[in-house]
Amino acid sequence: MLKNVKLLKTSFRELSETKNLVLCGLMAGLGIVLGYVATIQVGQYIRIGFSMIPNRIIDFAFGPVAGGIFGGVLDILKYFLTPAGSSGSFFPGFTLSSILTGILYGFILYKKPLTLSRVIVAEVLEKVLIDLILNTIWLSILYGTPFWVNLFGTGRIVAKLIQLPVDIVIVFVLLGVMQKILVQLKFVSGYKEA
Image 1 (cartoon, one colour):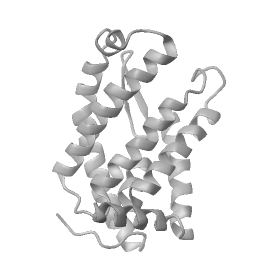
Image 2 (cartoon, rainbow, N blue to C red; image 1 turned 30 degrees about the vertical axis):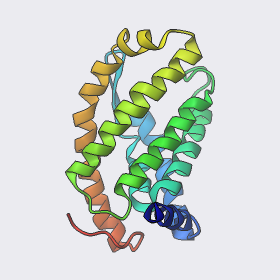
Image 3 (cartoon, rainbow, N blue to C red; image 1 turned 30 degrees about the horizontal axis):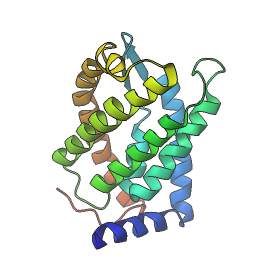
């Protein structure tokens, strides 16, 4: 428990450094651009995209507090920067999901060796707890449809099963590359090779 409190304090302090805030700003801009140009829609429910990469970089580099704040702020920014009418009305549940995703990845990856098993655990937990359960609850509230219909009747489970291995590979490979860059640029320290 004390270890987690220390981790939260360290993550919060990451936001007090100007260079880290600059990197967060750059990653936010990259996330917005990638959301427009680097998303492949396969059918109605499967989206393979790279816009989550900046989020994972911030979660990995700066931890759960910074990752949660970054995820929430970026979700709101993306809503306001999306062309009118294409994203529907704003729903704070999805912002909460973005915050929780940043916290989840931050706890699993921050200041720890980057391993495939850690990325798999983070991705599976995110897909099950946040994407399938929490976001399905938000869809049920938003559209007034039963939870079970949204979960089983829309292909969400199949979509997440297809997305899971793709996202694991994307996150693991790109975080491995980014870790080396961030260490060289002295954005992060204390990471051990797996």
